[in-house]
Length: 557
Image 1 (spheres, rainbow, N blue to C red):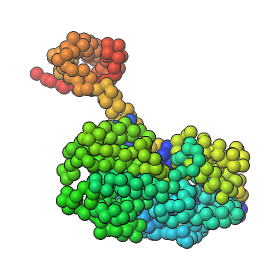
Image 2 (cartoon, one colour; image 1 turned 90 degrees about the vertical axis):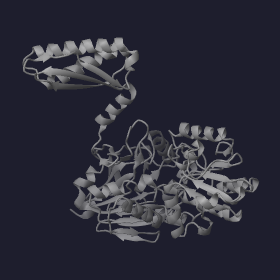
Image 3 (spheres, rainbow, N blue to C red; image 1 turned 180 degrees about the vertical axis):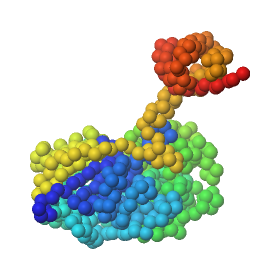
Image 4 (cartoon, rainbow, N blue to C red; image 1 turned 135 degrees about the horizontal axis):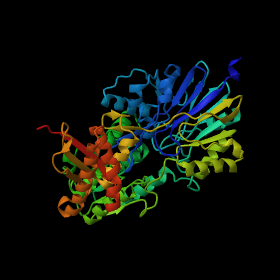
């Protein structure tokens, strides 16, 4: 059997049905190339969870086949899982563009992980493995050094866009339209394409338009201190904030560790100029208002971020002034709108003037392609098959419809979920098997130890509280020595619900005595019975289902 007749598999490990934790791989025989390793950030429903990781059990089982991890760009949802992945799976080499490489290096240093096989690629790099050839395509995104990736396999070519947009007047380099078109002429079998803005019509706004909007504010408020909150990873936004401050003779004071790290890396990499503008908080406080700009994290209303602490008046180094101008150069990530509104309201209460993308057009633009840009990518690459990725189901569905509008047969579009796979054989693609895929939770220093059962218990405790039943029993005489002690946290106030607690105490007493009458019942049996019987009893009385925690003490007199 020749090499070409053997299947090539594309296995999705994360990034479908969600925006975050992007990770998938291409496998041919004894070779696996992994693309991206991102995290997603836990929403309010995942109480106590710091990050959510893709399920890399497939990689662990096929560890000997892994040849490399390829990184499209340096955003957290594409590189954030790397420190955790390296602790569990042997990755022989990581290839990343320069900005991403520096961010990965910083992450590994923070966690005391030594890794010597981190290499930089650019748009001219070509990687040749035994079965697969890889080349990179320069794209435009909100972070420098963003790339699509082309993987030529014995069964056909796969191209992933990474995160991208088309911007004809970008702050950074232009996307390589020529190379995209050239690949399209050579033949692309499968296009894996960014779906984040698939619901948005038209073209996205150029980053240069944001530059114009910011300069207008700088021109109008030349005597006011300006505070700008934006995404720390939006390097091109930071770049033209530096340029605007340079033009308006303003110094820059930075707050927020992620902002400081990204700016430091970007200055060293040559993406941001005018390092001389940076000053400390102490120096900034001595300058006239029109001579300083504060650049900070907190555009999403995060409680511990710099802007939130400034709005609360709890920041140790910066206090708001009534004539301050605050700019939110960002858009709300889904789920963050309420937090942002709270922060904005606090700022208004302090008397400052606030600009958002809702009040001033073009204060922010996305780094992701709108519908017409997605169509342009399809037209340039001319794929036979389309697999939308990086989005929830409705985004993926709409992106597939755009592909159909551009002439891709409906049966050649694939809306998958995490764990699914495709089989590429002789330039034909079909649906493959599905692999187990469960989210991995990072809870402090614990990785994967907290499962869905623990999250469920946390939700119950958050919503309905906990009820503790303490019973003193003499195991020799099998007697309950006193009435059970009932105490609660987050369920009801003890002093105001004495009658309810007496009813629960009486029911618990009956349950324990009934089990003690059965000489075969152990303490574990008694605990289980208390859980089984008290939950419906309390639910009927209160409509709530607290966690029942029975504690039985063996008291021998």
